[in-house]
Length: 345
Length: 260
Image (cartoon, rainbow over the protein chains, first blue to last red):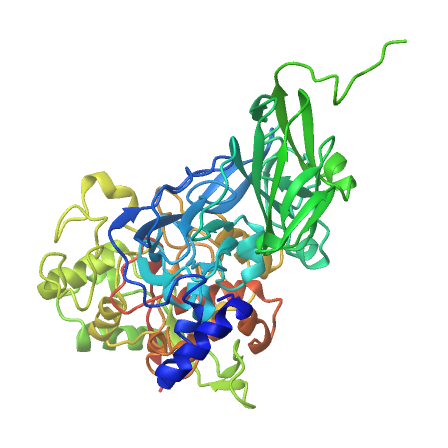
């Protein structure tokens, strides 16, 4: 719980004067929800596959939010002619995007499909409580588990599987993002997208055709064959590029599942107008490249002034050219020569 | 040795297993000699466990074999079983209480799955046997393959763990045989052990957060003896996710018997 101590001091003084036995609770009454806030009504969370993000929330008082995620182990393409056995939260890598609001009471169910080979669980970094929910959600194939948590801190949080061996579960794609909107809501933008980076370790080198197995040795040595946005080479490039129009404000929710590599997140030809540093409450402006560590995230915003195709990269640039770390935003609309003009000789 | 085994199986069949057909009476029990099992999770200072010699079923209990048990013990049939002892998935892959079904002919000799710990234990009791302990199972399971597998055993196991379940579960004895003569210790189904959820200490580890956290995340990385034995790690986390009444699509069992 964040504390605006400066604001809280006069209130605390009054509280201490009248009720000295209730400290620690009411000091936050000017900032953030009380942990015992009564929720009014129940909603079912909209869950989306990458690169889509659920609609901005319209309710303004804490709700009970029902979330159900399914663990699905399945073979999918990691590159056009290469397959991999992914372990997923909801059938895609990264997993479903979850959007709740600060103060919400989240009623969370994790279901492990009957066809799964292994047990799984979930540790949501948005949870205040033991293991982020991991111990409460350990589920064998065909079973489900349920727990409830209060979304106390606003921010964009990574969730991941925390079943041993954790590294292997994460390396196979078991991560996603949960956004806890602040009580005051988020500013309106024109487009919101979901991108999550992950590194993958396969027996065969990058692009080797056929079904590729996870390579434990390479994972331990941190020698990734693939570094990807949204789980597949070109998942959001070429015909699947993200889209925007000139003049539009775009917000990217960027996560990094890892397991190993920190992202130097950069959009070629754009400057982030605003960066929510590490997705926390600190706002930075005019940033070229922002760091997104494994198990961490960032929210970046930019206004797209000039039409064209913008490359989203990990600026540890060999990852982009040799390991797949590339996504694109296609911006359409009229040229803007006041901002950018190619001069003909 | 053969004579002893034959006598043993005769005792089992005549003494404890009334009503059983003769085709199942000659299931081989193989002797696993006394040995040491290094516990996967660190237990205080004492990490190696001496395991007395015992006899183990040559292969996992099949659907056909389990059907005999259910026929003889109707309270273990799908419709009559006590839900405390088997969840709603119990024998869900059979046609009805006492019929595996024509449509499922391919699985008669496949390991029986969708059976709870209680059902597995009852079956072994009925056979005059018991479920193996984790130490017994792990000691028997780590024995080297003597056919079919060319890669290191750990890699073979990991490869199997990664593969999604097959649509039709293959027959018993369809994977490798190890030096004890045991079939399919890895590569076919997971198997129940007697003390599946007590590897972390207390009787009901599921009730204690302190026990559970040892198999999660960071805590787990410091409490295991061989942190690169990812195959064992997966097996232990699988066991840790179980409750006695769970019936799962890839979980079967085999029985053991004391050697005395």
